[in-house]
Image (cartoon, rainbow, N blue to C red; front, side):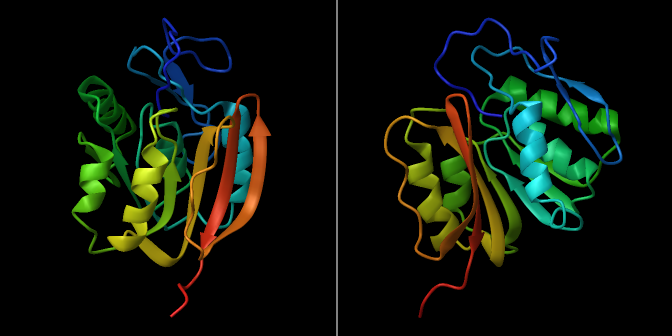
Length: 204
């Protein structure tokens, strides 16, 4: 997914193979996709991804999904493999975005778009068709969650009962969340904590 500040010479999968991610289940189960060789690229591990998609097992099929800091595309491709109706992948780094586009072509998927743009700027433009599932796994230690979470609400990116997956470093203070986001799941793996929220109807 996102990138942090650590100096990792090559991204690596949990199986030890550098520069690839693996799709766990669905129509492309077992497929491995190349990852752009960017310093500090931090794909969501298979262990975490399997847990997250167990949480989402009944909710991915036919949903509209926003992968806001797509990076390697690990979460977005997994959602597509499990028959999400559409995935928008937003990735600021041009080479990583090109790799996402190439991987979509390899999979012959027409159910996704890749936007090579800054996530905050994308959200500021607003949304006409809200998303039912949103992945938020930004680069660590840059304060991006504090910027994008209010925009998801104010610019109408979220369906009434949207699910929001949030992955962040476990040090420091958790970002402020809207009062209508209800915590469903909460786990930690090493230095990463990850959570699933349900967006409820805002209080009038």
